Amino acid sequence: MTRQVRTGLLVVGLLGFGALLVAALLAAPPSGRESHPYGDAASQISVQRQNTPNVISSINFDQRGFDTLGEEFLLFASVLGAIVLLRPTPGDKQVEVSDAPEPLDAVRALGVLLLPVVVLVGFYVVATGHLSIGGGFQGGVILATGIHLLFLAGDYKALRRVRPLPLVDVDDVVGAFGYIVVGLVGVAMGGAFLQNTLPLGTFNTLFSAGTVDLLSVAIGIEVGSGMILLLGEFLEQALGSQSSASSSGAGT
Image 1: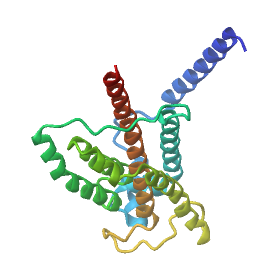
Image 2: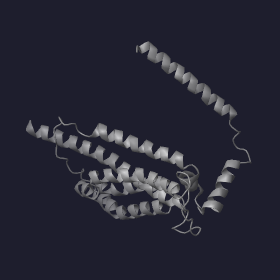
Image 3: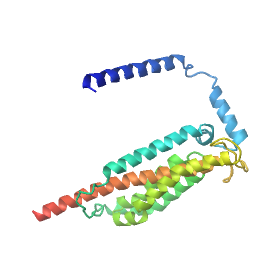
Image 4: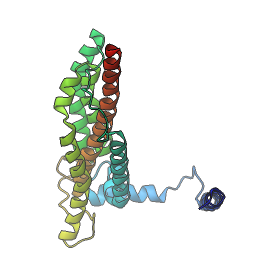
């Protein structure tokens, strides 16, 4: 295929996409109106039928569970692609990764003190995403951020011990496919895939909302593991490059 043909196909595709976008915007209801039938219906279904105080979690993990499944595997595929690109090839020279740069004493102390607090908040946000603001996406990012406070504290060796990347690889897969397993519960109980068929429990308690909380936890595992893998691979490459440069400088 020549360059002119590829350019022509690109132009045609962009024109078609632009036409569909304009048509969708023209057909959309006006913004700022007083009536919000979708929002009202989603809120009513969340509270009255699913025992889920957090309407956003109800929408993400029940009413539009298929959309969230697609978003999860988009992140999974993105992390997998980044890892494949960042990992060394068989012909690359293996370099011992150096430790993190030496931080200020205040930064070291703050990182050590905040690490357990941030990790605990991350677990809380994941576990109670069906009750209050938060959920698996937000909690997973908080968990990954909290663990990497060890890097800011200047102890990269300790960070490598608490988050071994091969084990995090497994956790990422467990979180991604755990969402599918929870979805299959609906099929096993005579319903549809991702249908909320588990007991709803008591409103506004931890063990309630059926599969909503389970799906939020699966997302939290996948997002947290994915972010840890991304940050870990970037740090391994960056610090390994520094070690290689230092070794070359010492050799000369």
